[in-house]
Length: 496
Image (cartoon, rainbow, N blue to C red):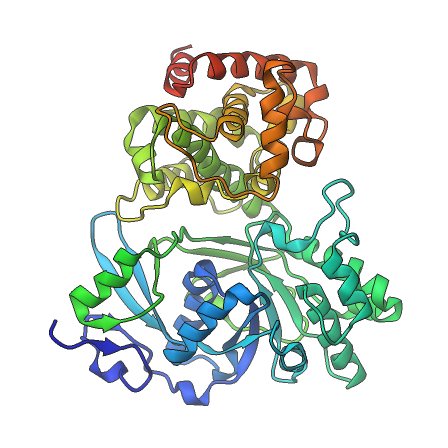
């Protein structure tokens, strides 16, 4: 197109009719939600649900104020501010259909590292009913040895001593809740939207772990008054690429510096436990339940573990994306066998869910050729993901005498991945992991001790001490190191 339209509130009326845009009055929004961690997933999920609710005529008190706590968040803060906090959600269907929707539920963005007291005041405001989080698994500051709040973190030490100048989210939450208590206001709900089992329980444990060190009396009030609902969240949201930005320019003449792409599938199952009210998200597809445990376990052990299975095996084989893996019949068959034989037997009854149909849907979603979910992203911070997504399935099957071979090959391949840092063709792999050096050093010792990688207790716990698993893993490691073409072992397992 000859003219370029800068995404802004003023220019919404100039957008082509096939781009859905907010019709509700954004100037009338109040930030009932403060959200920490405005990444792609938040913008394709919670902000999407909230936008849909506002569009349906929902209460204007449920706008969202985004918060970034790190200097690195400055880029998204600047872009969103320049776009009146609007962005385009590009929803890509497997059949090639694309829906484009401008999301308007974000109405502000604050930087905690620049003005922490302003963020504390926003959280403490009577308007704020919910503070939600997408801070990734690594953001919860868990001591990997004890499972408790990691007090050795220098930022945690700083926050304990400097209540009004926090760096970690727990310092911000505690300071804001102190203000609410002191002003006689009801506590806001703290709502995790991260892909973590019992995410609400974990958030509560970490907040209390911090608060007890800083202010034991406040910790008692938090424990009594603050709700931390568990939730299961699901929507595949790849990293935005330059091609996504260019697509909007080429097709619509729309200049959006940071759109978000995602699949059409979207799921949110939430325990109905809120301190000070909540949006009626059930009107736009969310599901409120008394106990989210069976649903989150299903998702973590099938979808999230499935991603890791394909991510690690596919990376070493030489595949680049999830859909490329699924289009390879060997990989899709291996994944389904893992789901059926090792993951499904560990699940609880999930009311209202047909597990076979759910697994069919997962394979279809993974195979969406228009969602180029890079395997490097899938493998990002695997040391945090696998202890949640995959290793509990292994341990449960060991206890029950179930199959462990499919998962063992994945872990043995991860050892090779961490050791060599290349795929079977010699191409370098992009490895981003907080424990990258620890894993690399342990994996390098495999020639002298085939269980060295498995002895990284921060990741595997005591798995190396289990005789049955150790023997299976050793065989897999020998196979992978002898012949890095993992397809040979995968095919052998499927045929056997």
